[in-house]
Image (tube, rainbow, N blue to C red):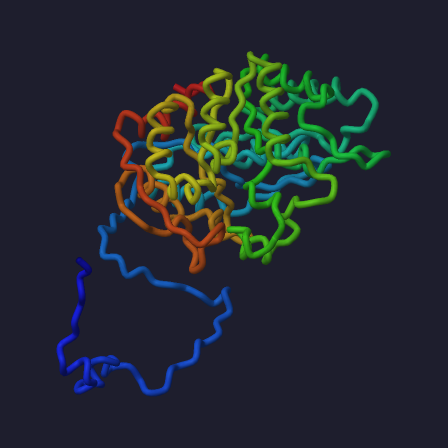
Length: 388
């Protein structure tokens, strides 16, 4: 038997037309208002706990900072912020040691060591950089290996390799991109291992940077503002090709410790985890990627639990005058990182910026236990750097 539904007689007859049509609805429908996406700054209506973490729970090493820039010829180095200002931030936020990855090469490296490490040996450590400008020169492989020895003698504690290897550095004659796993670099990797200098290596970039800048790209705003950051098209390799080239290097040099910066790009934690399982000399750091980790908090928490001995704290901090707000060196940046690692707060900004710089989402805290925090903040980096 079919069920039949009846309206009260008054409604059926239209006796209450105002109620039936919603009396609060305006008689003239308003028109949608256009808004430039760059001006959109939505404010969350969620009522959730907000924890302000002034200082890290334990002293830490920030293994990914850029405190100086040197010229490509290795002639000089320039501080981006006064040492006093840096120490002020460090003391307020419980940062025991900063690692300046862009320490330069040649005379520039020596200047950086003199500016940072020698006056404050416990507070600043310095990494050197390769001479990519000479990669096409005859005898480069031996020259670069010798340069590592010289840099170590000058005070360098590790090597920083920029993403330019694989994406920017080209052969002088053919203009072809130099591959990350080119055998000319093998003596360099071996020299780092022999001198116990970890290699902090930035390979590739977010996957979205290799896709068209269109309405489907979740980083459209970022790439539209910086189209030169895109590696879509032309002769660039894919993200996966770059990642696999790095892993071939890691496999060929088991006595050298490699730190895959930016969590080896964190959109695919399963892929990163497989690499960590396979290569015991591979480690990761979290600089400029809490925006990715924090939007997958359950997977990230499991990742930190499983690889707690292989994850290092880093921010990719750059003092003043940089293009990307998430990289500004300052108090608020560190507070966000501490909130992400130490609390279970929900849906908060991953960078000190009005508009999220990487993508329009917010993040969730991991609430890591003290045992893991101590390793991420200090123990893991201290072990690689030979600190007590």
